[in-house]
Length: 257
Image (cartoon, rainbow, N blue to C red):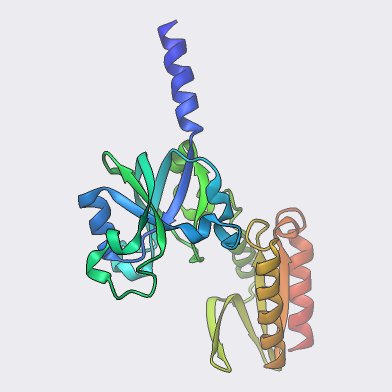
């Protein structure tokens, strides 16, 4: 009976909702580790802050992503914490030394914790992608090795790159181009004698919203007007019809060879 109760409690605990938040800089990490609190703009909880509207969802834990600006300790999640309490506070009261900040008088959700826990192994952003607020579970947090696993996203870029290299197609992953002062990151680039191909792998979670679809259309437009051939591959097609995806790329290479 005791063993059953323990297993039930463990299962419930593992299914607890975890908010993945972002630490903007090293000072935010210092505050987290020494003062045990973290802030979220209240704007993101409103109807206008549509990007983070799901933050109204109840969560018991927060995991903290450290972006590239952290250097060697960047692009990873190292710490998480159980929420003790939360309250609305003016930014100026949270960070009085930054009283001249543009959002000094804005409301923030102050999340407080009793202690900060460190994961046994960091969850890394192996295939660099923008990390914003999102949700996962405690079980997934403990079992994930990279950001894709954390959000349940198939490693579509890895699947495509591996297959193309197997058949002798040279690709340049994570390629950045500058077009009319706008910077675009392309999942894969293939250079041909008569042109260049941009291959984009669109996972379902990140590319179904209206905002992201609009960004994708703008990106396509800029690239095509600059002479690029753009191929967008959907997650489902990569998983279920990899051969067709590769054939499409091969046909485009043939046209530009």
